[in-house]
Image (cartoon, rainbow, N blue to C red; front, side):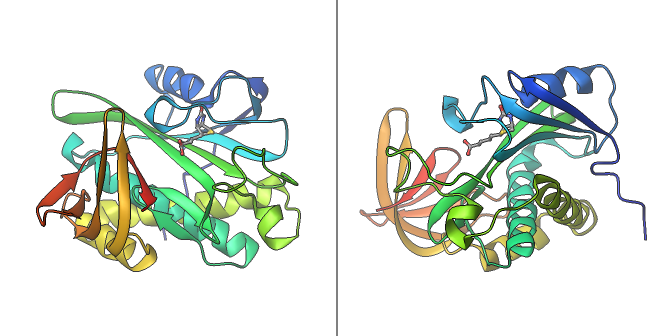
Length: 249
Ligand code: BTN
């Protein structure tokens, strides 16, 4: 049994602009794999696709994790799926529920998003130098804002319980490390198989994929070995989805 490295070093900031920026700076300066940058609040929390992540003081979990996988950058999508699996399993274990995962890595409770993950990779050429995995979990919010309440939720809203943020952090790090190990030791297929079993979005789901300048309607048709989502468009053509946000149609 190897010693866990995720969270062995945790650097906590009461308030910070974004843990992504701080983690990237620490990684550039040589911080070791598994280092966690944790924040009580973020004043400029970032989400996928240029969105912001609301990070009010002490009600949610906001952290970034530094990874140094020795893999080609083409494996970035599978690594993203592995992190989604780890976060979903961690949250599920901590609150006694089963979470769904919406490709690539939105974690859902009762069909609403309770956690989002932002993966940013740095490297030269085809090789990864470091990866920053940013995780936001809505934990103890008593309600979501009116514009978000139909699509987003918190663990407290769904279960009626409040949780120590350290409990959620510990469970999420434990399971993320487990799936990261699975990715490094058993390869991409182990992760895409596990993801397909854990996510109701991989196969036969009517969805719309939104990008900055397009909306594509179709039915999900499994994952490619690289982790890319296959979408059967309404004209029958299979389209690989590399990015964008997937929503029920
Ligand atoms: C998403 O859009 O779903 C991803 C959200 C990621 C938010 C987390 S909170 C901690 C880390 N710091 C950031 O600025 N963003 C990520």
